Length: 374
Image 1 (spheres, rainbow, N blue to C red):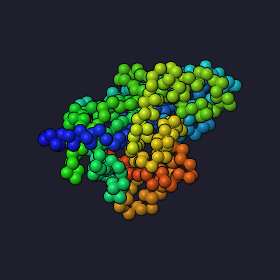
Image 2: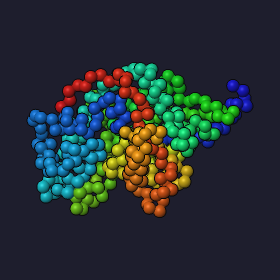
Image 3: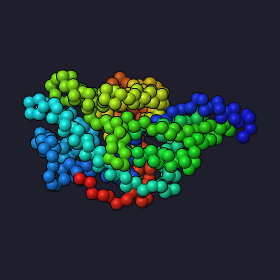
Image 4: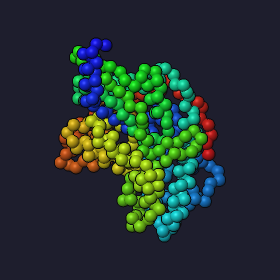
C-alpha cells in the first residue's frame, strides 16, 4: 500500500458512519434454539407435574389473562407480571411477589442456559460466511430503492463501523461475531469511486439485559419492566422492592452498580443507522425504543426493520407487502414515541425488509438435539 493510500485510509476511518445492530431473541430462534416464551411455558413453567407454591400462586392470580398461555414474546410475560402487581398488597405481598419474579427468572435462566449449550462449536464455515455477509453487506440484499436510500450501503463514501447491542440473554450472537472476526479480521477495505474506506466490526457487544453462561449462572440478568409506570399497582412508586429489582434501568444501576444503561444511551446517540433484527418492540424495553426515538427525530438517523413473513417487494403479493410494511412502521413509530407532527418525516427513514433474506441458516445443522429441561 502506498503512502498516499495509507493517508486516505486513515482519513476516512476517523469519520466513520456508525451502524448499530440491535439483536433480539429472534436470532437465537433462527439458529434453532428453543428460547422463546412459548418454549419456556411448554418445556418448564406450564409443563405437567409438580410445581412450587409460588408458581401455583402466580397461575392462580393471572389464570384468566391471555398473555399467560397465549403470549408470543418474553415482553408479553414481563407485561403480564407488571400487570399482576395490581394485586399487591391485597392478594399478595410485595415480598412474595418479588419471590415469584425471582423464581421465574431462575427457571428461565436454567432453560436458556441449557438451550445455549446446544450450539455446535466450532461453527461451520458456511454459517460464518452467511453471518458476515448479512452484517456488512446488508444493503446488497435489499431492493434497489431501499439500497439507494440506506446510508450504510456499499457505495457510501464513508467508512462504516458496525456496532452491536444484544437484548437476548445468550452469547450465541457473540460466538458468530468472534468466529467471523477470527476468520477474516475485524477490518476490511472497501474501494468506492477510487477511494479506499476502512469498515470495522466492533468486537464488544453490549448486553444491557445481562448474559447467561452455560453453567446456568445468570450474570447481571435484567428481567422486568421499563419503568414503574408499567406496574399495575395503584401507587407503584410506593413499592421499593419492585422498583429496585424489576425496573430494568434501576436494577442495572442500584443492584448491579454498572453503567450499562449509560453505555446503551451513548451507543444509540452516536449511531446514524439502526438495524433491528429479532426484536419484539415490547413495552418492557420502552426505555430503549424511546432512546432510538430521540435519535430518529434528528434528520440524519435511519432504521432498518427486519420483518418475518414480509414478501419481497418484487413479488406478486404487493398488497400484503404494503400492508405488513405499513403496520410494522406504525408499530415502530408508536414504540419509539414519535408524535403526529414528526411521524411522516420519520416514516420516510424507516426501511422494512424480509427477515428471511438475512442470516439464512435454515438448512444448516447448528445445534444439537434438544435436551429435557424442567
